[in-house]
Length: 507
Image (cartoon, rainbow, N blue to C red; front, side, top):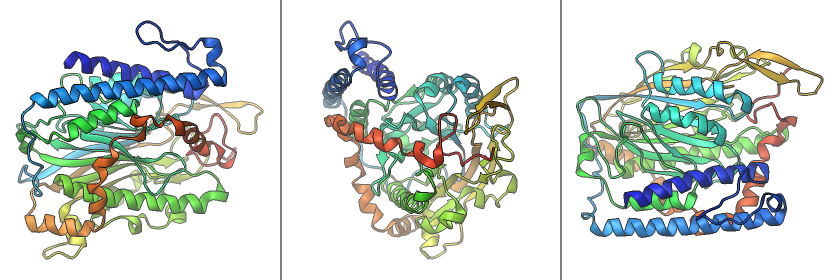
């Protein structure tokens, strides 16, 4: 029932903070009491034995919460109407073009004392965008527990619903937020890369209904409501149980009032030093290829009129080659579709970002767009042409220093520090206005499905991946995950005060 689900959501939020503090600092800041027994004293929590006991009890609480939610979901499902038929292959929706504004932003996990000022500005940028171009979807990378606590109320106030990466053992993660005219993500979930990752990377994804003004969209996942909502993804078992329960009920008939859009956020493998550049670059190419193949097949499966992948790709065109060679058919780069504007090229720019102290610049952050028509055109379908009606406009956000705020940054080799202007992040936000034709023919959609090739089978099995091993008590591999997540810190002598994605500074 509603009270039971609300209680479990609260438990998820509380456990998220507790686990983050325990894993990142080696001990909790507080001890559970009352009706949630966790008999670990502050002194015993500092010992390995205390931490092990704490982790065992956290895993047991996860199992109990996930099991209880499954019972609640089953009880509700027993009294619910029969599930609706799966969405048609050809998405229903407006016959005219769709225009959607999206934002990708790496918000930087470093320098905790600056989080308050930076999250205040980043929250405003997520809400206001640029002039009339207000985003309806925001993809965040390098979100930490402390940043989340500051940013989440601002996102909720702006009407966003948040879906997050469930594997947060690295200390920072990805999140995807939507608001009207997009509905909340249906079947929102975290999917780790099957090709592998040393840093726990993957996709936060889900589909949402785009309902322009005057249209009414709803889904079984519920609406945004006045203040937005939250999926507490850190409690993997509960989040997966909820996704599993909601994802099997199908969409309500009202869903056909809009057009479905598949959205995904990612953070591809980061640079960890010259000695591993080739290995990491190869892994990064495999991750991009897997992401675009999977998302194209998933878009065909759910009947989406478009798929949009946003994130920090960490892509270096000189070292990694042309990213287009790794893309599945039908994918286009928003910046290239916009005519490659030079003022929006470098999302990481040591020359323009006054908070950085080097001259390195790159187009790390990208927004990629796929449509069935573009895929059919790429596959040589009759009537296919170039980008098949796709168009984009792009611009950078967060370039100006925050008034009255500075960053004291230590020199890497010790011996003092320097005071720099504080900018919202070491990356700039990438804002894109994407336009495409929502209504397509059955023949074009069939051709797009053929273009997806073997990836259709991969997408068909995606539903089996929505229940992570943590729901079955996966905490046994947590230490290995933490060890893997430390890889970014080993790059090029990086230390506290430098981002894992930040190139070596020139003092």
